Length: 131
Image: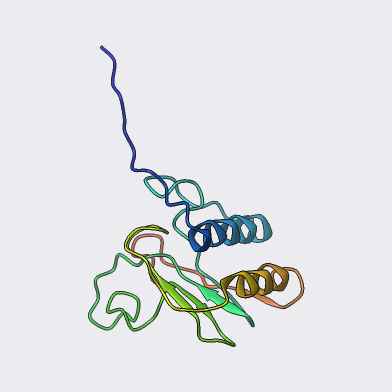
């Protein structure tokens, strides 16, 4: 008997590609490893912040006072411009992307990974909530 697993296609828009690339670089920098699944190896983001941007995985806690669950905080925020991206469960799914100069923003984000103090946002592995 043969079992065939069919996964949804991965989004291939530039913003999704840059977010997955940023996640990959963060994992290299921190030594963390993201999970796999429908989003792919780097498709869920990572909880991370530095002086240029903040990235946060989709939150599963369903708490009434969670800013990620209630939609008041985006999954990605570029601090200087306020440009943001939110997604449902994994990068590319149900994304809301603000208007911005995304090539310049992501260029700055990638450069910041090696030129500024970096802050890892630790999370409870069960809820994905910052600790």
